[in-house]
Image (cartoon, rainbow, N blue to C red; front, side):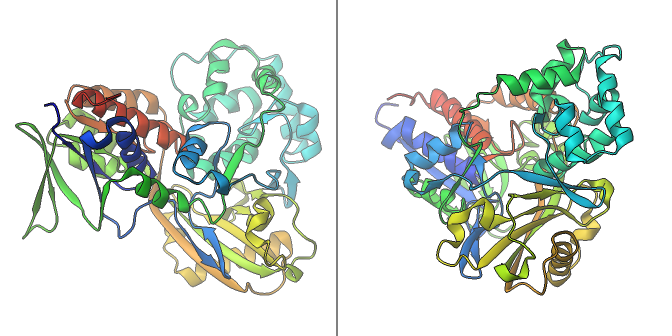
Length: 470
């Protein structure tokens, strides 16, 4: 169909859908017309910034992995390269056994590789510390299939390493539980060791030693917040962005796909040559139920956790001494409502360049299974966060300003068997011409992983349309 403009509809205006629109524009040029349909009043999903104490601060994700290039490259390509910033510090602590203790060096996702550093940190008890080196004399723990993070690491190093180091790190990323999360999907480097190495301690030491010392910062942010990225990508894509539009049905049509949007009494039909489904697993399952039932069934099995982020602004004088690290994580075993606290203005010093007398703090509340905690109103969540700051950090008085950001059902759980489940989804979608999926439910929760799935989805659609490289 030489010279005929093809229409691609993307369902979902989060960073995955918007990145897919941008890649379609790059690969298809004017031969491809792109429409993005987003049910919310704005695009961006969990990437959004708003003001706290007059400073634009992210409400959701505040950084992206710098050592995985897709996110930074996209930011540069849409004109935000000059706004990329490195964190002032990433040195975190763990609140364990009644005190803030430094995260030990030489660990990988909380799994220790240096016994001296682990002992120095004081995170585990003396008894827990004695259990760890047994890993070096115990028979191999044979891992032939995917297992939970907790089951493997507990077998090698004992319960305290799981409870006080691994759990808080996984909780910070997934808001999940180590006894449910997949070792293969959440700790791929550790999973490789589990299949081939007898000693986990030795394997972690090897991983740490193989990591380049001059690799640069692990994370990157944006001046004005990572929430700037979606709008910049949307604009650069040239797509027709329609917000407040819910897609209720997706059906195969004679020459492509038909989408039903809008209210039931007055639905609107949108015709497309190809469709990219870039919404979370649950709505994606509903959309694919009729035409791709195998994919829909697998997507329906992916659980999601909810969380809230309470951002507080304090006068610097409220702190007994200026915070120096990036923040701290809290193991579930401590029984505290706040699972992590970030000293945002320490981690990102540019935020308070104009007013160094303000300290911004971000408290994360909620793991999977703690939905009742999140049912409290905003004022109660702010009270929990301020009480945390007083009890753990010694902050005096009330904050100057506060903001509660709720993210209901926002974090997919990569539970045991996740990689196989995703493979089955993609296999089912692959036989449907002009259909692709992308998003955080598949290969990673961070911005770079989402951008990568978007690029793959766009390439699949361009191949179908015959538009890539033309």
